[in-house]
Image 1 (cartoon, rainbow, N blue to C red):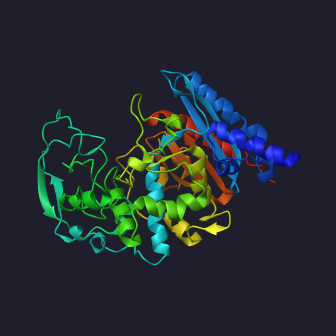
Image 2 (cartoon, helix red, strand yellow):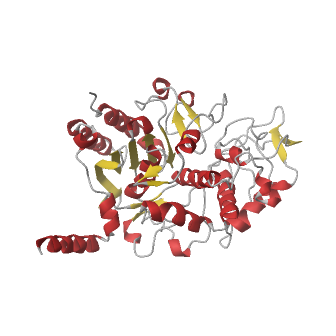
Image 3 (spheres, rainbow, N blue to C red):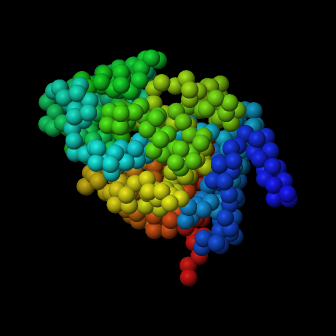
Length: 431
C-alpha cells in the first residue's frame, strides 16, 4: 500500500505540472560517478550559466548532459521572457529551428537503411518536376555582390550595393539526394535571395516543393559547400514523404518520436501545452501542431531539451536507444564523417566555430581539428545547431550527449557553449 501511495502522489504531481509520466521517466537523473563523470566538476555548469546570465549575455538557458544514455545533469536558469521575468523551466518547449535538419537527415537515412532510398539518386527520381533543365546564375564580372537576406522569399533585400547582374549557364549535373544532405546542391545560399516563390498558408510540401524546380541554382551542383538554410531540406523532407508513402509528420511520429518517447515534439506546440512554449519573439504565438499542414524539414519542429536529448542520445550510441536500433551503426558513422572532401564550409557562422576545424557529413557537422575549432570536444564529435542558440553534440567515443537551448536567436550563446563543452570533457574520470 505504501508503494501504491507513492505512485499516486507522483502521478498527481505529474498531472499538476502538466508532465506525462513517460516524460518523467525519461528525465530521471543518474549520479555522475555511476557513469564515470565527476559531480564536482559538472557542478561548474551552474556557475557558467549564472556568469553569462548575470553579464546580460543571455536571458537564461536549459542544459542537459547524458552519458551511456543516462542523464547526469539537467538544469534551467534565468528567464524565458526578459520582459515578464518568467522563470525558465526544464519542461519548456522551444522552436527547434535548424535542429530540425538533423532530424530530417536521420529520417532520410532510415529510408537508406530500409533500401528504399539511394544517396546518389537524382532528386527527379522522386520529384518529377526536378527533371527539367536547370541553370546556374553566376555574377557577371564587375557586378555588385548579392545583397544579404537571412530568409529567402518574404523579405526585401537591401540594395545598398546596387543590383547584382547575373549570367545564366546550364547546370552540369543533376541534383542528388546526397547533395541535399551535404549542402552542396546549389539550390540556395544562406543570406542570398533568389526570388523564391512565396509559401502560401495552404501549401504543403507536396504543393510547395515542386515550385522550386525551375529556380536557378547558385553554383554548379557538387562544386562547393554553402548552407541551404530554408530550401534544400524542404526538398529532402518531400522525398521522405514520396518514398515512405506518408506525410513527413506521420513518418517522424511513427519511426522516431513515438518509439523514442519524444512526447512533446511536433510541428508546432501540441494543444494544451502553449503555456510551456517559448516564442521566437515576444508577442509571436507559437503554431499549434494540429493546425499545421506544412511540415518544414528545415526548421518546423518544436521540442524540449529532454525530448531532443533522446534523439541525441540515440545518435551518441551508434543509432541504438533502449534496445531499439534506429539507424545502423555504419550509417551513423557515414553521417558523421567527412562527406564533402576538400570543400570548405564557408559562408555561414557555424556555431561560432571556425570552418577550418570542422567538416560536414550527411546533415551533421563533425569536429576534425579541435584546436582549430576552438573546442575541447574530441575528433569525431558531431552535432548541429538551430538559430545559434539551440545546440546538440554527440561524443560517440565517450557516449556523451549535450543539449542546450537559450531563448534567443543569434550567436550570443557561443561563448557559453564552448565553456560547457570544456566542463563536460574535463568532468570525465580517467582511470
